[in-house]
Image (cartoon, rainbow, N blue to C red; front, side, top):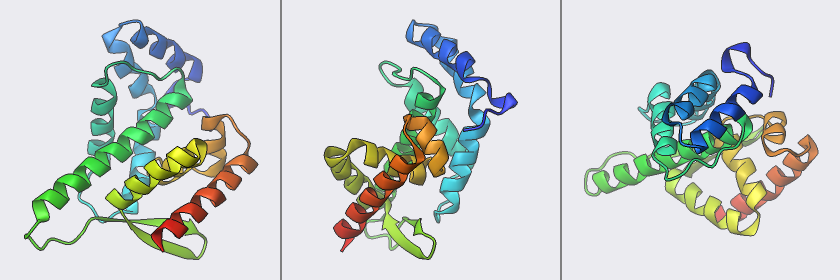
Amino acid sequence: MESNPDTGSGADVTLLLARARAGDAAALGVAYSAIYDELKRAARQQLRRMRDDFQTTALVHEAYLKLAGGAQLAAVDRNHLLALSARAMRQVLVDDARARKADKRGGGQEALTLTARLDAGERAALEVLELDDLLQRLHALDERAAQVVELRYFGGYEETEIAQLLGVTDRTVRRDWRKARAFLLNALE
């Protein structure tokens, strides 16, 4: 992932995260601010695929609250914080979908769905809660493949960005994406 001068260097974020793990309450906020623009880009891409009234800024802020509210911050560097943020965005959207599902019982509201681009010509609508369940099942079988789906789908990252985030090659990401895609399509049939 190319370093944007506005987002702070990876080394700066790593130092801030170390301070946060050591108990500096403000350091996580500063680290999150350093990657804020990148998180908004990821959230904007994610929300484009959804029919939802969630705002980009609200999703990024809710993800931050999830991370900041955790018992102990586990992020060790910039890439890890981006990956954890993508997971937190997924959790926010899943929580929202659960709340909507609970609210809609008998209300006749339209179901909240996600539309994922599985490849160039193929699109599939996936219900948020079903996708979450499938990702949990995939995680038990192949943790990295589940991370690839999470980063691609919920984080809005491209293959080269995911490779850098996970510390693997682009080829490995493509292979994991194919495995994950096959698993998800098979599970949906």
